[in-house]
Length: 304
Image (tube, rainbow, N blue to C red; front, side, top):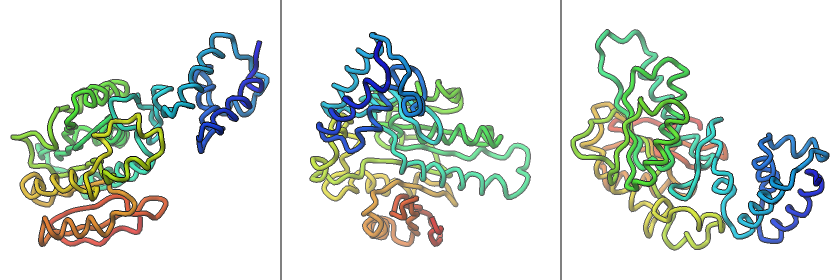
C-alpha cells in the first residue's frame, strides 16, 4: 500500500510543472482532503498509509489541479475567518483579503451596540450584504455576532443577481446554523421596497475587464460575473454608489471592498457621485487599500 511519502513528491513535481505557484500546498491540501485528515498529517507523517481508492481520488484531484481548477473547487470547501465554506463554480471563492471587510463590519456593529444599554423595543440594526456570492461575508458576520450575543439585535439580508450564488449562500448559512437569521434575495444590488439600511457591506466585482485575462488560471473557473468590474473596475461599485443616498439610513455606513490599486480611484468616484459625502479607505494586513468606508459625515481612516 502506498504512503503519503510515496505519493506527495510526484504530485508536487507535476503541479509545479503545470505552473502552480503553490504546488506543495496544493498537493498537501488535496491529499489531506481525500484522506479526511488535517494537512499537518501529510507533513508530519509520511509513513501514513493511503489506500487504493484514496490514491485514485488524489490522482484525479491532481489532474484537475494540473488543468488549472482551483483547489477550493476540487475540495468543495474553502476556509474563511476560521470557518469552512462550501465552494463551487456557482460563486467566487472567498479570499483572505475579504476577511478585512467582515472585521470592519463587525466593529461598526459593536460600536453601535456597545455604547450603552439599548431601550427595550429599540429597532434592530438593518444590515445588507450586496453581492453575497458564497455568503462568506454575511455568514461569518452572523457567526461573529452570535458569539458576542448580539445576533438578536440585527436584521440581515444577503442579495445576489445570481440565483445559483444565493442557493450556495443559503447552503453555507445552513451549515453554520444561521440560515434562520438571514434573509436571502435574488436582486440586482438591492431589492426594491427594502431598507433603509444602517450598514451596507459589499464585495462586488472590481477587476478591470482588460485585466481578467491576466489573472491566475484558476480564476478562469470562477464566474466572470463575480470578477468583471467593467473598463475601470468600478462600474458595478458605481451603480451601488448611486443608490446609497436613498438606501442608507441617517447615520448609516457603507463598506465596499476594492482592489489594492483602487484607493485613490474610489475616493474620486465617491466625490463625483456623492458630493459632500466622506470616503475613508481602510487598509488590509498587507497595508494595501481594501475597504472604502462611505458615510455622510467626514471621518479619517483607521490605522488599518
